[in-house]
Amino acid sequence: IVDFLQRFYQPSGYFGYIDDDSAPEDVVEFLKSCFPECDHLISACLDHCTYDDLMRNDSFTQCINWFNVLFKDAAEALRRWEGADSIRSRRSRITALKIKHHNLTKQNKRS
Image (cartoon, rainbow, N blue to C red; front, side, top):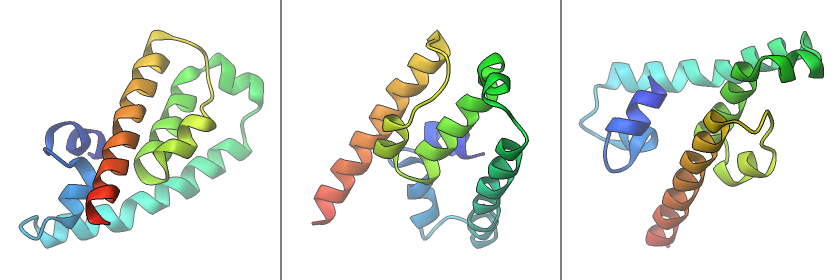
């Protein structure tokens, strides 16, 4: 859902949708209540994985990276980026950079 909103809800993606007064209140409440739980679920999964497990399966690492970009801080997520150097990882990093710079531009406009 978040990936869809980030891609197609223009110009401001997920956080723009959350802040949009015309967005359905029940959907916004669902998004706000569910996605913080993802952080807890990811942490629980990480507790059961070894570093070798993560390196063998890049999908989970990519999910962690993407979650950190969307819900935490894109700049910090880029500094802590993990996983194999793959085409998918490079594309995700480019998208993360775009989100980071979009968020910085948005913050500068508010100041």
